[in-house]
Image 1: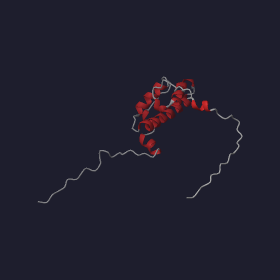
Image 2: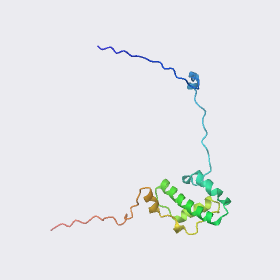
Image 3: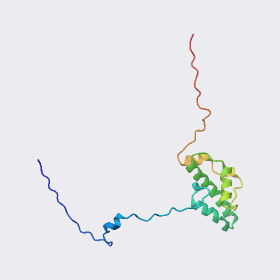
Image 4: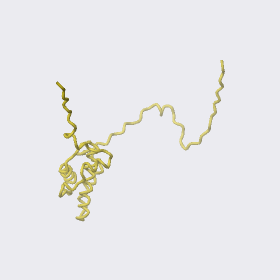
Length: 143
């Protein structure tokens, strides 16, 4: 039988904090309340909602057009990331108008980025030929 020897080395460490007491470690911490927010469309995020709510402060017409187009495309990206499904531009335009309290309105929803270009940027491609997939061939039997 082989005997092993163990060597215990105590190291002194200087710390700016006191050692915790065992009774402090045994008690449970207080519960932290989860923030409750009234978000209509949670998949866009709270900062998107804040930006759109504060769009009323923008007076410059060109800046407002730029914000409208940029936020609509961003909302479409967020929708696609969250839902993994195609979305119509009219839906994004309506939700943008609703979240901005009718301050931002997309003039032509067809000018938004296409779903394919957004998904391609994320490395996902839609299968365009779902209905045109190969049909099973009928086997011909010789008589």
